[in-house]
Structure formats: structure tokens, C-alpha cells
Amino acid sequence: MTKKYQIRKAFKTYIPEKENWKTVSETPATNVMHWYRDGSGYKGCFGAGLYEPGKNYKRNWFLGTMATVFQAEVLGIKKCSELLVSRMTTKKHIFVWSDSQAAIKALLNPSADSKLGWETMESLQKLGTNNTVTLSWILVHEHIHDNEMAVGLVKQGATQGESPKAWKYKICRKARAIMPDPSKKRSKHLLVMDRKSLAIMITLLTGHDRFKEHCRVIGMDSDGRCRFYNETKEDSLHILCDCPALAATKLRWWGTAFLTTSQVTSKEATDLLRLGKKAGLHI
Image 1 (spheres, rainbow, N blue to C red):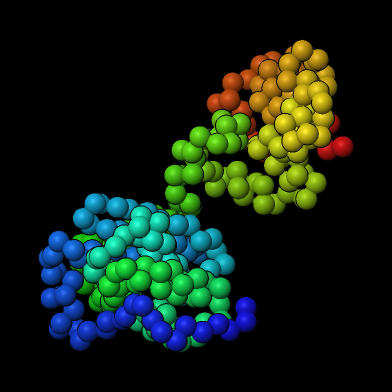
Image 2: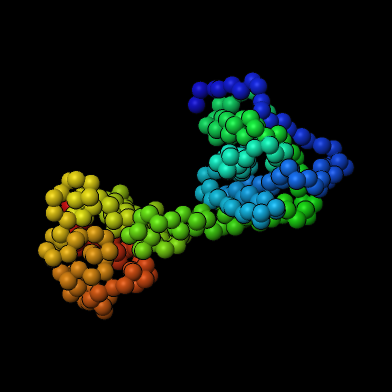
């Protein structure tokens, strides 16, 4: 990214002496908000966490294995400021607590040459337009309850993957029926597949691409009926669960001709791939 500049800051930073930080962090006021965020690595994976004690807000993010601790630290600040901007927060004194002086000082810098750093600066600038925003340093390993909550969320995000909140949305009905929860096991199986096999699996799991009903919806086909069984619309759930033309194959392979979505979920990725190829999704 080309270096960008933010000369005037709508937020400030506060790195107190060790003996003074606790006085600020425990100051109660009706118009003051304290947000605790953390970012770190755990067992080869990285995560970020955000906690606000007033409303008991908790959130974590999985950053995979290629992030850095610094990126995780900055992302936590970015997510916090974006959330408060989206809530149209105004006339508040907002303390965002971080145990990373490096992250705080980087955001105070007048220039940024990374996308994450610049987007975080921009988000803080928006939040600071109608609020008093302070990025504050907090001592680590001092057993501060609220900060420990953020640390716990980081570990949870790094070990469990992305928060399943996205699975609660009402969109992507077919994908959510087949994948009701995040699965590290299935992810590992998918990541070692060749590109053609992975394309078939994405088609099966999302219900997009080669299914005739999906092609009809996006205007690429006038008839969404099954290519094997001409009386039912062809989508991923039909092929995986109840297509009569594939019933004998499933009975021979798996001992049951018609599957429920929970049975599909429990199948190995290689089993679903084999059925996808049988259905001609590789063509």
C-alpha cells in the first residue's frame, strides 16, 4: 500500500506510569466507556478479543496462522472503533485499553503503510469526531478482571476459530443446513484437496455454481428441475439428501438411500466429494 498520512488526530493516547494507570481504569462516570481488547497467538494460531464490562459485550476473531501478534493487537482496536461507529456512539469519553504500547504508538504515528493500520486510523478518526477517544495502555499480567476477560476471548478465538455468529444469519439457507457450525476437521480436509476437487466441494456445500436451480435463479437456465429426476428442483440438498436417481448409489455406499441434513453433516468430505463426482459436478 502507498503510504498515507493522518496529520491531525481526533483521538489521543495515554501511556501512564505504572503506579497511575489503575486510577484511570477504575474511574466511574455515566458518560465514560471502557473497552478492553487483546490480540495474541496461541498454539500456532492467532486471535483477537474485545470485551466491554458495562453491557457484558464479548466478541472474538480467528486470524489463522499467518498473522502476527502486532496485527492481532491492532485489529482489536479497529473492531472496537468500527463497532462504536456503527452504533452511532456520541458524546462519550471512550477508553480503549491495550497492553501493547507498540500498537498504540503506531496508531499515533502520522503515517501508515499498511492497510490494517490505515483503516484503524480512519475508524478511530470517525469515532473521535463526536466522542473523546483515548487509546490507553494497561499493564499485562496484573490479573485485572476486565482485561483478563479480553485475554480469554483471544485464546478462545485462536483455538476455536471464527465466532459462530455468522451461522445465525438467515441467509445462505442451504449452506447453513449442511454446515450448521464451524468445523476445523472439515476445513483441514478441504485445504489439502486439489483445485478441481475443492471446486466440487464448494459447489456441494454452498449450493452455488452448477446446480440447475441456482442457474435458473441467476438467469443462466430457464429450467431448474433435476437433470436426473425431472420432477423436483435441483439444488445441493436435493442431490445430497433425496434425489431418487442417486438413491441406489447412496444405499450401496452408505447403507441408506435418503439422507437427512444431519447425516450429510456427519459424512467425511471425501464421501461427499465422491457423490459430487457421481452426480457429474466435475464436468
